[in-house]
Length: 147
Length: 147
Image (cartoon, rainbow over all chains, first blue to last red; front, side):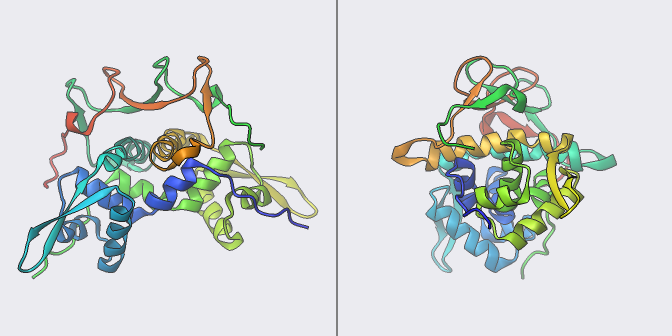
């Protein structure tokens, strides 16, 4: 007998329903890098056109990107980040750091960011209350939901 | 004429090749929450069994999870995070916060974490060098790669 599935109600799962697909997050990455137009996104991500079209629609419907027309004949659009879209920057940065640390290999990170403080940006996840680095061993769950 | 695709060499894209799929990250979430066994992961994620099997194999091959046998008859395994796996915690936390802020709705966040400092954990992404919150407007690229 297998226990029935009771998928966890979870903000991570909800977030992944919207942005949990490679091409969706790579489209968001391109907008952060200033490439707002479909053809440029295709060129810089390598996404299949149909897939990118579908992902952009999902991102617009989810309120992450806004579409602005920049040409009437032919109709052409570019994509801008909403507040919810800009709030994905921490997700992008933590993925970037993880890829830099675990997948960059001998050549090192292909893209290096610099912070306005003048140093190379190494993004860290810290606790808003105390400012300390967050370690999985130092967090517990407050939720009453079981297991 | 369409310009040829020259996908960006990028740690984000590389990271997403490994963890850029909903069920992969939800499996990692379950291991962080202490659910290391296949049936429990199925129950708490709602993943299709074949999909979870494939994702777990990818995560093991990528050095994110390690498989340990806990029963011989029948053979049963549980999954533990490697160092690279534990390093995904910031990714999980930023997704959690984004989902909490943008998708939790009236009921509020379904899972609340507490930091050892005694406060509710609100994870922030800060610059390792200066400790300030990182804003997209305050980062620039050092890489020589164009566009």
